[in-house]
Length: 271
Image 1 (tube, rainbow, N blue to C red):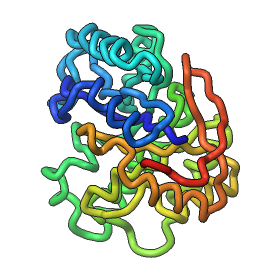
Image 2: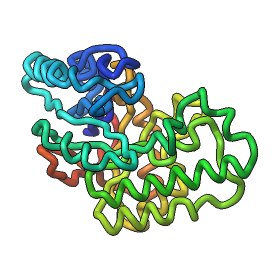
Image 3: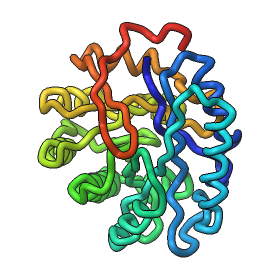
């Protein structure tokens, strides 16, 4: 059975449903376990879509309440952590704040509070040169994130395509340094169905990048990036078809920041 390790809670200010609701839905559709991975708090206010540091104790309480409500269903404790230049020390401090099962690394911001997935910034990238610049910055930071070795897997790899903005031509030269970084660090890549619910209407990452990852023996984990309970496990059938068609036969599970390679299921069953 598959897992879903990328989900959010209302504490991040842009999701709905308590952790127990996410866990119940995961159990209902036949997943093996779920992970809660709200956006990491920052030392001071940074944006309007993450929990403040003062809410971290409540986050722990909500996860514990879910575990008590479903004692026979594994519920993992995690965070999705933004990789932002200058905050590496803060990530190390965050890693010591709890007995996490895993930490997800992600890149949203490319500079000065500009996030590649924020609709208010789309108008910045009008010309081909603008889009190439944005992609170049995004992938540079993505490689940098992987090489910090601070994270257990790396989220929605080609998020820069969220609005359908892509440079012309072969994009593999953007992916190559990232694949090499994953090889060098024994890193894990997320396959995310979230892109199917965005403007781009595609799974993250692109098939070409996934083929490169498979050829380089980079492990994967399939997730939804759910912001409502009913998004847990959504479109996993499509993700499973994609990764199997590329050649993948295994995925990864996490507990206490230890990885375990497990076979991909033949199908999703109830999911």
